[in-house]
Structure formats: C-alpha cells, structure tokens
Image 1 (spheres, rainbow, N blue to C red):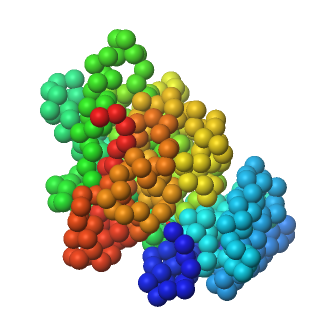
Image 2: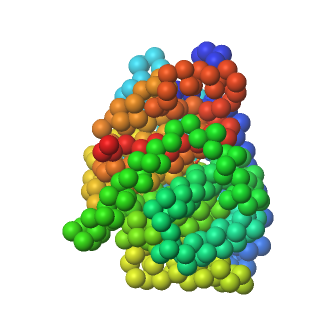
Length: 439
Ligand code: F6P
Ligand code: MG
C-alpha cells in the first residue's frame, strides 16, 4: 500500500496518518522514556551512561526529523545480523522507482516498508549507544499493560484451572465450545496493541470471558470449525501420528500474550495438540510485540503471583518449557519488511521450521498485512490467493482489523460495513479467524 500523498484520498489514508502523526508520537515517547531513565543509566554506567543517553536521544530526534520532513530513506550503518538484508531491500525499493521519482522516501514508499524501517532505525539508534545498547524503550509500556490487566488475567487463569480439572469429563461438544471460547479470547486480546494507541496504554480492564457473546457479531470471517476438524482429526489418529504440533506466531506482550499462553495450555490439556512452538521478535518492535525477555518475564510474573490459580498457571507454563512441550523460537525474519511469500527465499530455515507444524496460528494485524502483502486487494479475493504462494502448513490468521487490508469476505460484506461504519477496517472493533489449508 503506497503512501504517496498525490491524491486526497490517500493523504487521508490510515497509512499516511500513521506515518505522519502516530509514528512521530511513538518516537517522542521513546525519547521521553530515555530521558526519564537518565539517573538509572548514570547509576549503572556513570558518565558513559549519560553520554550514551544523550547520543541515543539525538539519533532518535534526527530520525523523527527525517520522518517529519519526508527525507529520503537512508541505508542502515550499524553492523547487525540483518543490516545487509535491510540495505538490499532498500536497493530493491530504489529499483522499483523511475529516474524521476528519485529515492524512496517516508511519505512515498510502501507503508509496510516505511513503518518497519522506523522501528529498525529506532533499534539502530539504541545499538549505536553503548553501554545502553540493550535498553528496550518499550519495556515499561509492555509491563504496564500486563499489570493493568490483572483482574482479567486472574479471571482467565481461574477459568483455565477449572477447565483443566474438568477436561477429562467434557463431551465432544463441550470441549469444542471451550476451544472456541479460548480462541475468541485470544482474538480480542489482540485489541491491546500499543502501536495503534501511539504507545498510550490499552490494557484489558474488564473480564473478557463475559463479553464473548456480545462480541460475536464483530467476527467477519469465522473458520473456527476448520480448526476444530483439523485438530480433532489429528487427535483421532494420535496412535499412528503421536505428535500434533501447533505453532503460534506471537504478536503483543502483556494481556494478549496471556490469552495466547492460556490457549496453548488448553491445547495440551485437551490433547488437541502435543507440543506448541512460539515465535517472537528478536528486537523491540511495533511498541508491544513480544520479545524473549517479555515471554520469560511474563511467565515469571504469573508464577510469582500471590493468586493461587495464577501462580499454578505460571508453574505449569514453566514446566512445559522445561519438558519441551512448549518451545520458544525467535528469528530475524519477523522484524524485516518482507511479505511472508518471500520467506522461503529470504529465510528458508524458518520456512522449513514452519513446515513441521500441523497448524500455524498468526496473531495480529501486522502479521495479516505481511500474509497478504499489505496490498489493496478486493475484499472478495480468496485468502489462499492473497497469500501469493505462502503455504508452509495449514494456517489461520487471528486478527483484529487495524489496517486497510481485508480479503475473503462475502460479496457486498465490505461495502455494507463501510456504509454503516467508515472506520471498520482500522478501529480494531472487528476480527477474523481466517484459515487456509485442506478442506
Ligand atoms: O500502526 C498501525 C499498525 O501497523 C497496524 O498494523 C496495527 O494497527 C498495528 O500497527 C499493529 O497491530 P498488531 O499488534 O495487531 O500487529
Ligand atoms: Mg503488535
């Protein structure tokens, strides 16, 4: 989706407003966060820490100015595992432009590339500022999101523990309903991303379990039955095929991550799966996306809780990791600007890893944009087609809509929604369970 503000409609586009207004806001919050940690840097590193903070702030201020004045996109300079891949991608973007178009620029290049580039440049500013080069400018807001969602986290853990003790006695239908419930909770947990809110808090304050019925009308594509039939088929052939692997490509930390871990726990206790593989981000990303630090920190917090059922969950989750029933992966591909149909070329090792799964769940809006290439498809284009050849295994997008791309809708469905609610694509109120795989 191009950003070019040549025409009025595009200059009002969510993409353009995101880059012009919300992204500088996120950079300003990052600069404030660095400033507020000045004394901590001094305590830890003395004068060198304060010098590093000044350097990081000046690099981020320069980045914000480049963005706000629509300067050309420049190559990354600091050596890091993905620097060359990024600079090759920038050359590729340059090659798409005509002579007269000049260089790729903030307001003229594809939104997916520019927004990802902003977070990558933010990371470059931090790694260029030792000894604070491991500082996560988004850590506080991610942790705050978890602490502000305590009531909902406790309700979820209590529900899960009650389920775990009753699961043997549930009949097929009851099990299916519980399965669908936890998937819906994981879906609506995705409303809590912190990039859409420009870094402002967006935690889950109410008990989400009680609002699932009211939220059902907002599910625009519902392939839950496809997920149930796939996993129950695997369960029935467990003697022949002892392993059923579900991979979860994570999105946001905090409350959403809790909903994903609760789902992953139930998949094991219900024997719908035998192992769960999680994928996180290698660098701080889109404000709230999960890194390995966030993943381990959250499980530790849940385990340490003084609430009986919450700490029981934390202990179980830690054991799943120790026993290899839960495996955490991170890979640099998830923080590149590439659409997923390029994965088999750019990251063949990751593609091969995903091919080992019986089902892959992709959480969130950014993953959906990358699954569909962030293109302006007709709403009725089949999901399989929009994946442009990306078929490592049966997969399902679990996403709340926060960007102007959606496929696989019924004829007229998109138009009816637009007529009743112009912001339906970006307000985060609507969600999908969109599956691609064997019938
Ligand atoms: O800034 C907008 C955006 O890029 C949209 O994709 C979405 O609003 C958000 O960031 C990411 O959402 P999610 O955490 O669901 O991937
Ligand atoms: Mg996110």
